[in-house]
Length: 498
Ligand SMILES: [Zn+2]
Image 1: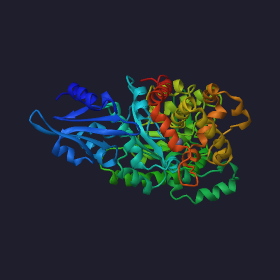
Image 2: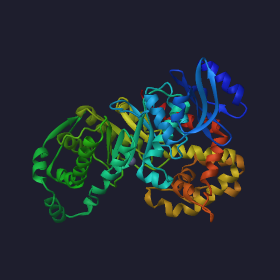
Image 3: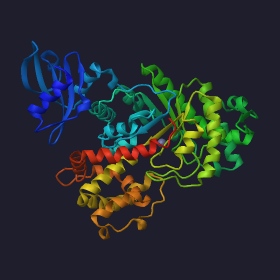
Image 4: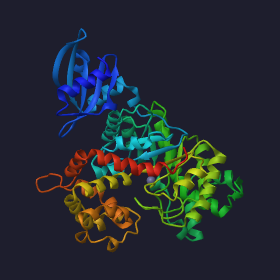
């Protein structure tokens, strides 16, 4: 049988009950594998020789003789066991190393966005990092590394995607988390040493600064490497004068020790090549160009092979909305960061909280000549809730009211200037107007910030109040879900050089 015959046969016998995702049909020798969608669930269907089909867990629907072979038709659930078998048969289903290529991360909190994300990447020369979730996000979505990775790979299979993609264990803070992510097959690790970055340095007087400084081991050795050294960067010259250097050493030295320790672990533990990102974005301190220079020179001196560096760039970076701040001033300062990266070479700059920062993308991409990484996550979730608002306004109204109740509690872990009084009163909006809420910063943030509460809340019987209904609506209106989401991610990708 060939692909066309499989398609005809399946549609003739099962087409009234199941929709077949045509691009998903893959073959290995005479065995065929594809994804179908039923009323409530998706399945992996295999048309395979009996001995091959036996390895997969599922339900045999038919066994018959075709072209002299004993063939089984089996419906299998999209579980980890079946996926592991598929990944052995089709190696393109395994995530891979990205290295110094333009790349873009699409965090997918619900685990059903990958096909839409891939549709946005089509035809663009940007490496997709499809599985990307932070430890904090997983606590809020009640997912784990394996689930995040598996969901993304099932999405690749459904979409028939055979290109490379990455899997980013985001904002990992310690070796235990690194080990768990590595065990599950992640290929990119974003180390977040923010717990080791000294804060409030600016508020200390000179005596306090000196006391603290003298506690740092090897401070003199490090100081001697940089003191009064000059670096020509673009038009400017950066100098490590004593005062600035000491502050930088104070701020970052513990964090760098932690990064070195984590890197040493990973290098020994992870057998395949991996991408390493160092992120110092989640700290109160804006990373100055001089601090940026210090961080990379130290990492290189200490033998850390890293690919990406995420800094805390100038301005106010809030979730799911445009950049807040002076774009021109950002551009001026960023051009220095980009010049440093170009001078030193060997890594790319990474932008976190990249959702909806449309005014920043052209600058970020042009200054780095396309060699950058960008992370988004919340914006996909917002598109998904937008589709809920379009298709089930009553459910959206419930979610919205619940989010209002939980906002004060949930905002604590975010940097936000959201003003709930600017969120339109939902009772005054018609169903058709609900979708406009997703064009307004305050109402976007209301839904963005509260995602964990929305997804986790259960009723007295232990049933999810919103989560299952959200999945159900997006399952039913999958074409709308994929279209809205891919168009929105496309808007991001189109602003980047590729
Ligand atoms: Zn970050």
